[in-house]
Length: 285
Image 1 (cartoon, rainbow, N blue to C red):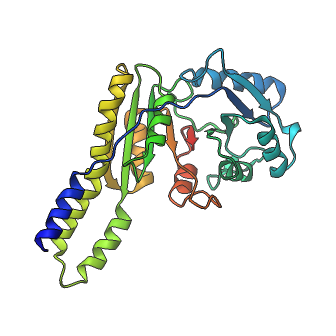
Image 2: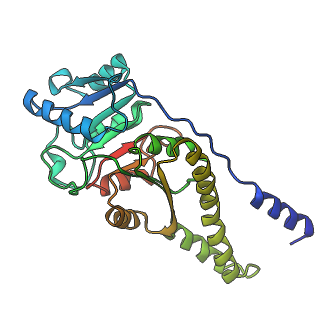
């Protein structure tokens, strides 16, 4: 490596991502359901209690029932006409497939991609898989990603849904399988020292999100001094790691991105997480 390369590496490593605190505002929450009137009232009350961190007297709550749409197209038209800031629904809307752990259901699959509105995904009302501490409040919220650095939107959304004096976890799980694939390639290149590459690359992959979270912590504390901000940056198998984190820290809500750049389908890493993490509500943005 030349002196110029070394200087450039040092310069780049010292360039840390900034964070801008900007809490999103919600004025209209749309509940999408296929329940009957009695169960809608009960479900709405439960949801509003659970979302007390964002619910207030200013927010307008409206409902789309199963009688209001008979197709995905009709549902999307209803959403477009009502222009909500947040959609609340549940897995396998208008479907009995909630009994099997293989999808979110066609309505939810399309809804998360065809609208720009954040979608709160609850458990199906007939499914009994929610952890005992869930649906009471959002005292423990976790933002999850494999690219935390510079993701102000994810951080601010997670903060918004965390109750005052609660704990917001900013988590980054680097994909162990992908890392091992690249290490295998590097091991086959004689000019590269595999041990040095493994240690250095792993350290840098985890350093960048750690540095960003530290920047976030300092800035957030000036605005929300009663909120605890904790970081979790590691490498592993994403679904397994998040299941463990959810259990160990009694997480009430996960916040994650679901849109790919072309918006044609849920991004590759998000879908297995959304399907696999079934015991906890998700905020899909």
